[in-house]
Length: 190
Image (cartoon, rainbow, N blue to C red; front, side):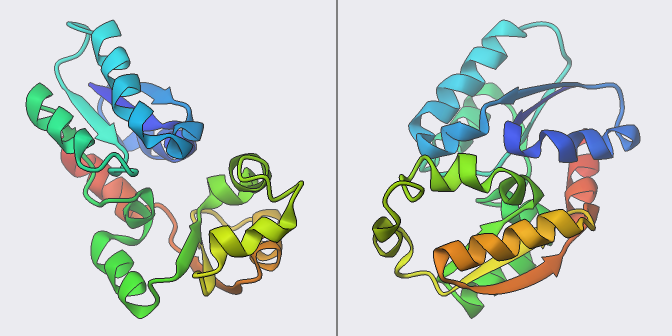
């Protein structure tokens, strides 16, 4: 089985790998989230490079801003993917994620990966490290930052809190662990 994942989920896929049958993991760079129109071509390249090497392929990523292009690829290539429009829903479960969005649409989410890579994935690419006055343009409609933690890590918790301060958002911490993610990945792998 081939699992294609966003690089932002590589650690989590590996963490649940012991419970899955034999698989190969291939990841595309997490930075493609900043250019979602490049995600499907990156996945297509991986698929073309691995033709005939696996019995089936699972995509461990959400739509990630592809505007449905990812689901069209899944249909065309007979692929399965984890449920949910965003990887955040993988960690909370789709229903809980939808409830959080209903509760406060202006929510910015961090996972362990994003807390660890906040400067590289958010601050520098958006220019906020050089021009903090851009914060309101990007995040003016956000109200809170919710840290969905997969592990218990005091350093990541501190980083997530610092991100909330940098973005001037209220902070919430919701430990998720890997249970919903592991369950859904195992279901697709069965």
